[in-house]
Amino acid sequence: QVQLVESGGGLVQAGDSLRLSCAASGRTFSSYALGWFRQAPGKEREFVAAISWSGRGTYYADSVQGRFTISRDNAKNTVYLQMNSLKPEDTAIYYCAVRSGVVVRQSDQYDYWGQGTQVTVSS
Image (tube, rainbow, N blue to C red; front, top):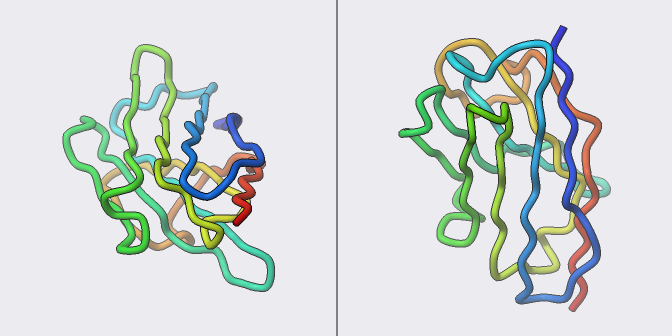
């Protein structure tokens, strides 16, 4: 069993920055792909960013490209999401997830999920 715990969410104004963290236990992150997803009220869960097991491959949704940066620290079994230039449309619950193997963008291909952390961006 893999346990994932997100942190770092909060209430900010448009243009501000936040850094989300996701700490894993039960398994190491080596050989696993890690992803961030989000779900806003009334909308389906959507892909935000993902990172390969090596940390060398990163992938982003078009809506966050150039503003968000995903990274990982294998020694700490932790993945991060640096969010800059936040917009009100970024408001959502953010979830981290892990799967064995290569990076994919489909949420149903991830096996383990955290409880989520709320990000609220005011105008």
